[in-house]
Length: 243
Image 1: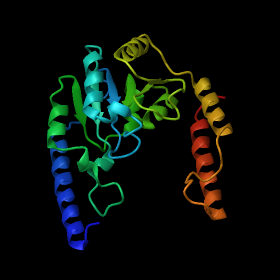
Image 2 (image 1 turned 60 degrees about the vertical axis):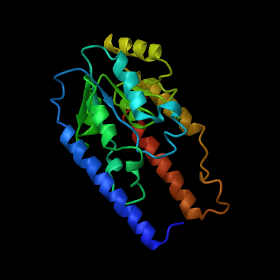
Image 3 (image 1 turned 60 degrees about the horizontal axis):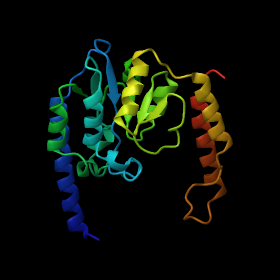
């Protein structure tokens, strides 16, 4: 456990590295003319986090995933890479300020070297990117689910609760992804009724209990609040879908 001086030093070093990463990313990024070329929206997860390690397996390595996608992308398609904005959080702005542990200057320089990859500013509208993309690609992010709900296919590489839903492919091999790209190119669109049924089934099978199994006694108001939040989230998803 670091003392106060050591903690201050660690936070100062983290701030310096994060701001250097952010400056380089800003220099490398450009606003695209959306709609001028076919593209896949590549949305990396925030890291470090359990959602990629262990949930994404070997694809916790973002460059491995990017290499995987870039190597089999149709020749006229591009990859639009938009960094998770929390990667650039600095200390004392919340709990998510350790992005520098998984991103550095060399990382972004490597991303910029791909001929078919475009780096986008973090403030560009994600829904606009989703709506005009061929598909959305992420390790385990809910952006793939949001994408399918909005009518754009999504791809995940790790284990998530929605990886069996209509419109979302869990890619395990290059052959899987190549075939999915072909289906998309031939006009495939997610069936919204199947998505609605999946979400309804997920709701019907879900437990209203508080998820933190290490806590024995949860105040009633907190448990009720948790149930209400989950219900509101699923209702938000469902209200945009035909039943």
